[in-house]
Structure formats: structure tokens, C-alpha cells
Picture 1 (spheres, rainbow, N blue to C red):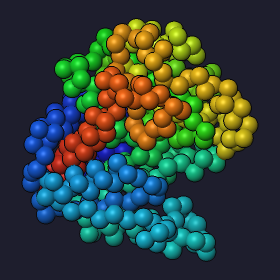
Picture 2 (picture 1 turned 135 degrees about the vertical axis):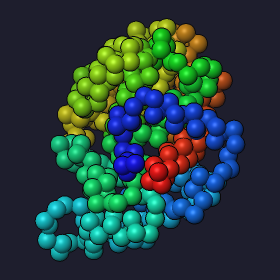
Picture 3 (picture 1 turned 30 degrees about the horizontal axis):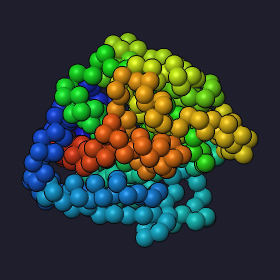
Picture 4 (picture 1 turned 90 degrees about the vertical axis):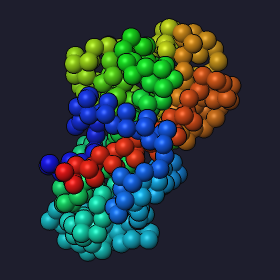
Length: 339
């Protein structure tokens, strides 16, 4: 079987994603196993992590494997990713050697690398993880770059288990922008838009204005997913209209791409939309909707205490599911190599 990476859910078919979710649900019922017995994974963190690091390390352990955590530039050498560069700066080694050497040691490589927030035309190429995928001879896993596929699977599993069915078609899904004092990565928003449309829901993207629309690539993925899986995609800048009748509210803050790298110019616009916070009044407009967020979440900035502490909040369930879906992905990729 040809080696596969797990960089984006768009690279995997719906039946394949359904199989991963079914396996994750099984791991949720029975946490221990031997799917990674004698196997190892290198976890490379270019950015901070709590849930991702904990769930990947623990997941490998629970399946009999071993995880090695590396932080390039801290406890490992800084890495160069450009081709043909004269390496007379901070980087001590090139990804071409790093990926190939790690491939001789471990069975899987996972990478977490956020954008630099300077030039979106560069950041949207996702060069770090694609460089690892290009040079590695073992499967590479995306632990969050400009998308967050593991969060996608954890989110969908939480929704399936809350609603008690695998079929989420017919549900009104609101992906809402929320205020944050700093401009944040669009990764989770990109991923939420992808996976919600992939599973046939009626998706509303709620944001302050058109400057906050997501990258054209992910808007096109969403439109394509609707065409292939049913459901719909609606754009809204009106919270009252968007929330009305919703079954799912998913919140995330992100920076406006036209202001990428010019955040001081974007700040007044962001500051003027603090009212996009998820609160009791907005949730009361929904059809008894569930609320979730990828975490971490700033309480009373993105969502109120009342929303976070209500029975409708499934953010903790979603966070737990990271452990289970990641085990399913690791097991599937190792199985694929051994086939």
C-alpha cells in the first residue's frame, strides 16, 4: 500500500473519514490496545501546546507506542525550510536532513507549525509541514498549521455522539467569528468550514464583514463539499439572523486576511465587534443548539461563563475526543505502512 500522510481531511474520502471516526469511537470505549506496539512517533512543536502534546503522547502510550517530543530552536536545532538558501543565519540544519534522519528512527512524524503572520501569500503555502511530507519516508501528521484536521475529527465525533447519530445532514451549523484582543490563526475556522460542509450540514459563516471571510481555497472547498455532500453554505454578518434556529454554534476568533501583517490597522475593526461574543441571548435564538470551541478560550471575551458552564457546551467532550481520533489516525497510518 502507498504511504499516506494526514495533512488535510480534504485528502481523505468520506468513507475513510467515517472509518476513522468509527475507530475513534471504539478507542473511546476501550482506551488500551496494541496498534502501535513497537512503533514510535516524533512530535515536532514549533509552537506551544497543551491538549495536542498531551493527547498525542498519551495516545501513543495507550496503544503501546512511544512518542519523542522535539521543539526545534529550543531543545533541538533550528531548522531551515527554504531550498537553495545559504544557511548562514540561525538555522543549523535543513529539513531535508531532519525529515530523512527522523524517518530512519521513527514510524510517524507529526508537526505543529503556525503561520508567521507576516505575509499570507507565503503562509498559505504551509511550507513547513509540506517540506516534511516531501522529504520524509514515513507518514507525516498535521498537528495544526493553517488547518487543524485533528480538531475537525474530534469536533465531528462530539457532534455525532451528542446527537446520537452519524448522519448530521439537516442540522443548521453556525461558525461564528468572535472577538479576541489579538489576531489569531485561521486554522480552526478553515477546518470547521471544511468538515461541517463535508458532513452535509447547513453551514452559516458569521463574521463582521467580508474582510473576515476565509481564504479562497477553503471557501472553494466548502462550496465543493456542499455540491458533493448536500447541505448549504450561507454568509452572514448579522448575529441575530445567523443564530436563529441553529442546532450547532461553533466559535473561533481569527484575523482578517486583507490586514495580514498589518494588525494595527485591523484592530479598530476587531475592537468594534466585541458584541459577537457568544452569550445567553444569542443562544436563546437557537433551536436548543450545542456550543463548542477548540480551546483555549478566553471566558467573557469569546463566550460568557453562562454559555461555557451550560449543559449545551460540549467543548470538553470535543477536547477529550482529540485523544481518540488521533489514536485512530496513528493506527491507520501505521497499518497502511505495514500492509
